[in-house]
Image (cartoon, rainbow, N blue to C red; front, side):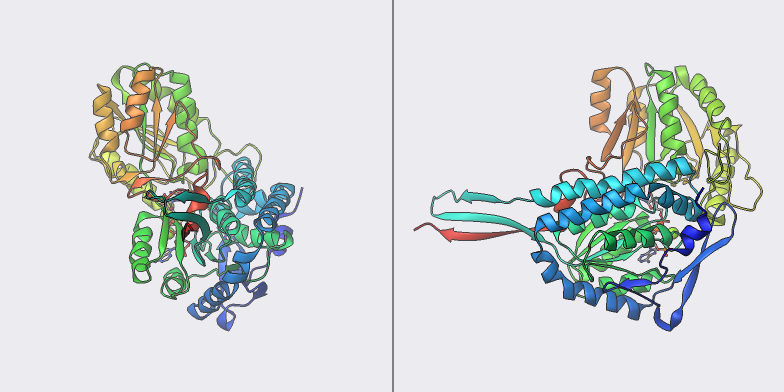
Length: 486
Ligand code: NAP
Ligand code: MG
């Protein structure tokens, strides 16, 4: 088996600006930790606002040339990068598990999912197209084309270290945009390994510029205020998203926001119980519950609530928690001590308000940041976890008596990313699916993400969509020529 230490030692840990790896100003570095062991596994460059300035200036200087490259050239870079990622899937999965904690099987899944955005957008790059029409009075031709929006600011979270990056870099390359990219401070290694892959695939200098930093607000703020960046694409918390939306106003920048969620998981009285439990395991335990799409609130019809809860608790209790690189482990650590403290506080608040712990419910001792899969029954809807992203493996179950009540509860939140719905009644599925205030609905499934689908949320879960046919549009501007007919 490949030695993870060697793999990590082989990753460039500098800033990547204008095609060159370089030290941060003053040689500053920051440590990267393995959340399963608490060990420092690498140190990467800790970029300053002066470094950020050089990165955005490079992106600005490179934009015009990059926009002129043939779409086929950009398409082939993405396709080659897809192939290289898949060739190195095992190495990337090991790096990801070491810095982020998810079990290897899930890391492999994310590598395939993340790579697929490059293949998808390599296919979209050559199909951007345009439009041609005649004005209503017959006097003018209108020739519509689409152009790259310009230099983009990309900022990503730690929970999906590869896919959150490829979901932005893929369409930006396809559309002909240059980029400055800041990956999450706790999980920079996967992103840095991805840079080497893109260079190997032929990405020209200056197109993608990467700054890792422990001063996110000053690095990203420098980009937002630069007057050079034309767009920001952010995935992360609603709180930080709002800051960036505010900053985007000064220079009237385009924004794409993939923010937090508070997903309802509704199990109707006629649901196939086994399917619902399978879906719940996926929607709750994938990524240890550290996903924007994680089911956060389980609404179950009173007639089946006790069966559902005990089956779910049995499946959750059978999971093996541990270091994700070890065989047989299917639940890894949370990202850090704060992540564990947040989950503990939410569980203790719910229990204080009358919830029963069916399984789990007590933090595991270190080293590493472990919290066991937990099921809570009889949860009071006033509990804090009903309107807080849990970001941990805790499933609170709330009973309902009729489906309209479930819908009301499901929609009683400022977020609207995804909802899950389990029923075999087609009419009910279509009605509730229409009326759930979310951007995506999983009908009898606990997994909705796919590069072919327009991923995204409504309300405070975000603006815009990533993936699908519309993913590339977020990086394009419309322009038309009006030409009088002679
Ligand atoms: P976060 O704290 O919002 O951080 C996201 C990114 O923003 C990180 O790179 C972070 O840098 C940076 N950042 C933090 N403060 C900033 C500031 N003031 N100005 C500019 N950048 C700043 O979110 P997180 O804790 O990493 O990730 C969890 C959140 O992401 C959850 O809310 C989850 O729901 C959401 N998420 C959403 C989606 C989606 O598609 N809708 C997907 C995955 C995750 P540092 O690393 O240095 O803090
Ligand atoms: Mg954070």
